[in-house]
Amino acid sequence: MADGDLQRARALLDVGRHEQARVALGEFLASSPQSVEALCLLARSHQLAREYQDMLDAADQAVAASPTSEWAHRLRSIALGKLRQPTQALAAARRAVELAPYAWQPYVIMVDALLASGGSDARRDAFQAAVHAQRLAPQEPEVHNSRGRVFQAISDPGAARRSYQEALRLDPQNPTARNNLAIVELRQGRTTLAGERLGEVLADRPTESLYQDNARTAARTWGVRLMDATSAIWLSVFAIAWAGSPMPVLVGACLAMLAGGGALALRRYRRLPPALRRLVRRDRWPMAGAVVQVAVAVDLAVFWNAEWVPDAVLVGPMAVATGLAFFAVLRLRNRAIGAIVVFCRRWWYRLVVLRRTG
Image (cartoon, rainbow, N blue to C red):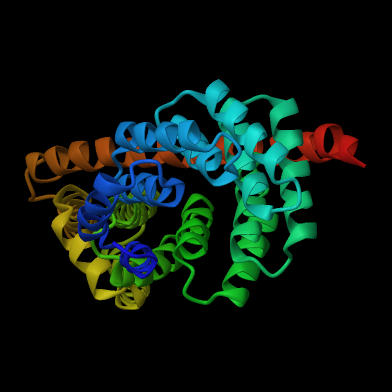
């Protein structure tokens, strides 16, 4: 295989065809087993296939063939990080930085290794590495993605969003930025917007398991939020009924809330890409919970003031609705606590940790 064939293997990897690239690289390595470029490309093919132990083996061979190859150490750091060996991953990333102190790529890898190490000192060092990478290559999208990951780690979603948006400005099709930006939106409760972004990523990379997992998470969260909204409607109808409102008022209030909530939910559902809508429909239990809450709200509004209706018509459905609403209240409480924790964590890092970077 000539050098042009190595470039063909690289091109195959760029479009995600890692199996074909691996076959070609295997043929080349049979005659040139010490080729650092081929070994690094082989490690990259295993990375795309999420075969991280094989990736590490290929990277180790590349390091053995050329101990001064920063690319080989960089790939080794990635593999070690995926295999949950953060100490070794950080050592490999630091070695890559030593070998290429003026290249931005090793600093980006070191950011991830430091974040995986945990601790405030590691996050401060990760911030410094991301800043240095940006100074070296301000026009590289992956540099801004690394800054975004640092801000996510210190619970600063606003700064993370700005970093990912800058990466998208430089490369509108960058899948990492689009995926990570969707995760930021999802964690802030913007499930529809997160679903839109993840749907775009999934349309471009339909076979990527990471994006598939994130899309399923977004669909589940969207459905759970719908169930929480219907629980709020049921509780509101129950409060109006308990206050002694006459049947016309109770029924009118129930229908008004269901109509308004249904129109809003339908509007947001239509904003989701087709792939996300399918995932929402397939996730049956949140949809079933929402239907139950709506049915119980209507049942309560119609029969609360009817003396001729047996108690079982109301008591049984109300017990089920109360159970579902209980978990909705717990989720609301957890989100409120999480928001407070994120706020405190963000400002502690800003004032105590990142401030030390100067």
